[in-house]
Image (tube, rainbow, N blue to C red; front, side):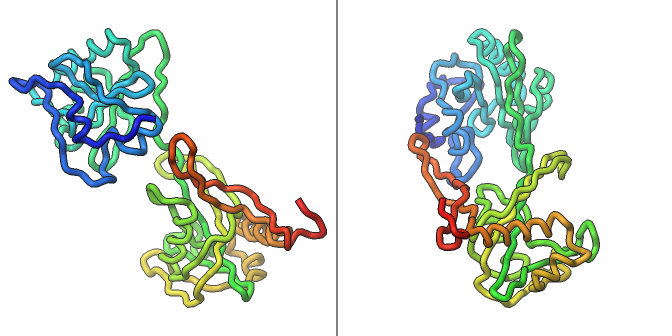
Amino acid sequence: MTSVLSRTRLLTRFKLNTAVPLVQLYARKMSERADTVLNAADSWFNKYVAVQDAPEGIFKGVSDRFNGITVDSNLETCHPEQFSSVLQKSLSHWTDNKKRGIWFKVYLNSSHWVPELVNSQFKFHHAKDNFVMMYRWLPSDESPNIPPYAHTMVGVGALVLNDMNQILVVSEKNALIKGSWKLPGGYVEPCENFVEAAIREVQEETNIKTKFESVVSLRHAHGAGFGCSDLYIVMALSPENSEIVKCDREISKCEWMDIEAYLQHPKVHETNRNFVRTYLQYKQNGLKFICKDEVHSVLKKQYNIYQVEADSTKLPNSSL
């Protein structure tokens, strides 16, 4: 597997005519988590490699394992008056060399590239607060094989049960059903594990510190925010303290509620009741849906593996 190259190392692999370059490449000081076409999130999957044999006067970019090219406007700059000409020469070169998906990562300081790219049949793929990613599929003899951008929002809910058989519940200020009770939780943040997200959300909303016990259930739906699908993962957590301090910005009420009261409460959604019933059934049958860390033998990338595990001390007169 090709290792991740730093920007500086990447730039040393390009051969430029420094006399009057139409396209200039330069390095920028960046943090380890700054966006780059060669970042770890992409390179382990796409195996980006710097292009060394591109002729002068075109965008060089980096090549991926799908025979595509990615151009980063922070790595290759081009004077506005020359951009259209350089782009057309580049497209001609890539077409002649049977390149497939062409990607332009355009940062705010190069936003003048966008109209020209649109005029050259590029489409928007996704955007963040400081860049837009645009693409064009070059082959005319095959349908576009461009992967969709992230289309599912991931949230977590936390089922926190104390030693007095009470469940931690919250009522949100902006709840869809006013005054309803639900499990604490929220959306998973970028680069955050599901378990970490559940623990964080509980502490932010209620000041209760917790530790992971088991996954309880998954809920999958469509038509959520921004036209995305929605994945909701419920975790069972054990509390490490009991004093509630609610988040005044988001939460109107928060309390420890007797579990039987919760299961009978008229302002608890039936789906949430089922989460609790499911967890109680797991406990009765000595089952846990655990999370453990593993490292891929080839990619050397850490994974969270979720799997069912039986507690032999709690199995009802049987063993697995």
